[in-house]
Length: 200
Image (cartoon, rainbow, N blue to C red; front, side, top):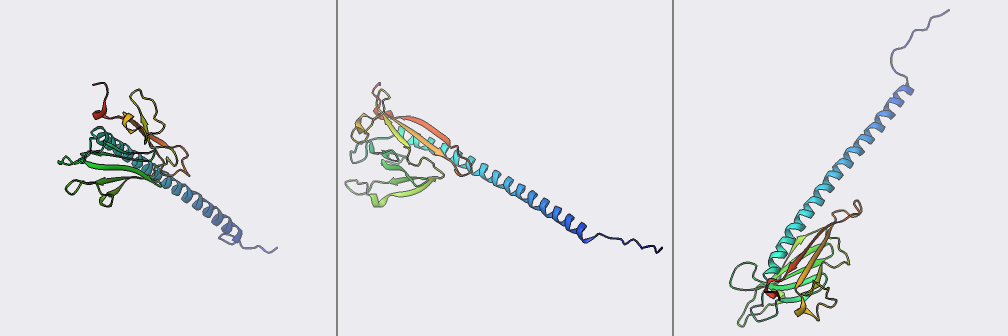
């Protein structure tokens, strides 16, 4: 009987099985890491967008509360639409009242400011300085601005009843990635027009 010498090492089948297991573990762990980074990034983007929306809402509150008649005598509220609101207010503490406009452009909330110029003073649309102030706004067709009278009744046609507006509700829905997180974060506040209070 001839004794066969045992060969040291791995067979081709053993190497293939080990390599397959290693590759599967590599892809599973890398997918887990990538999903973790995406989750962290989503959380950061959402939190950043929410904090910015809260800051912007506070800015809107301060400006609208101090709204006043324009330097040329216009009523303090100008455009009163669901996603486009303009008014007059002195936002930079100079001697002039600026025309301020907040409006939604796609998913970006923008702010326009017009300084009055000339003699007599005019608010020229071509002089409007527009800046992007908040992104990831997910209101779509829902109103950002709604308008109420002295008794807190919703004004159905605010454009025709501008003089009746005493309270403005700001309603902003934020979602950095609506395809990942279907629930929106909502920032909502009511603003009373100080210069139009009827109960003074």
